[in-house]
Length: 127
Image 1 (cartoon, helix red, strand yellow):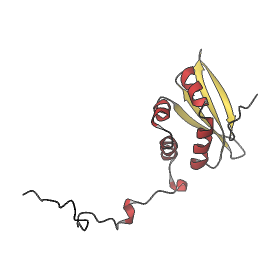
Image 2: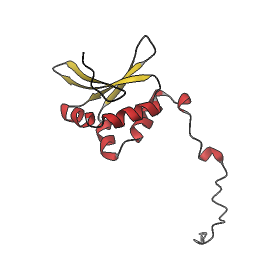
Image 3: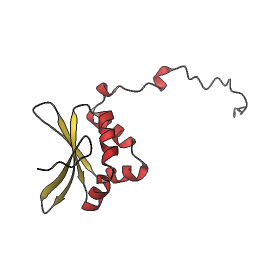
Image 4: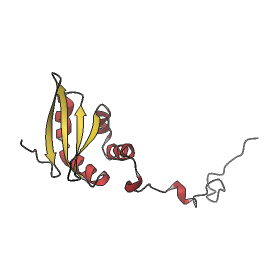
């Protein structure tokens, strides 16, 4: 038997939103690196997320406890497009990782990794 739902009845018993587990957000301190990466990607618009989907990520930890988020782009075009999003990248890093101080946009050419490293302010670092 099909149950009819009254669209004007806002007292419907099937909608019990008192369950706080439904709205609970996991604290960043309890997230895995993979969950943090997914959170990082979610803050971008759909076109940037599509570009990031084709990238590989790794965190290089330094001895002093800081780190660099390295983003390996599939080609130079993606790297150039993402470099225009430097401010967005740094803002999103800051919301996901407290120890990451730099990020690099990398591309592999001729079996060599070529990276442009940026500060938290989005400034290109020179070697």
